[in-house]
Length: 116
Image (cartoon, rainbow, N blue to C red):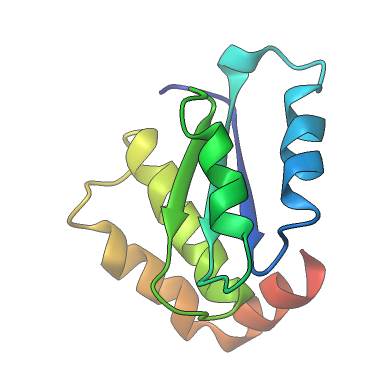
């Protein structure tokens, strides 16, 4: 998918909010061909994943489930990796190294976790 914007949504135990969040993103005035939504379920233990399954068939939405809760920065990094591959800015095999650079930057990691 070629788009202008990748919206990365880290999700951990947000069963009561994720539906409204995604529907709000769908109602944006930007044309749907210009954006994608990448939801990273960060090992939720509530019904978040089940709620997300209702959006699996939507072509705007990509869902990745992390096997265990790793924190917001890790979820964002995983989403960034998906966005880079989708846009052809990285090869699937090269993403771990590029994302690892982000993970090593403690200052960036703290800012990502705090400001999102």
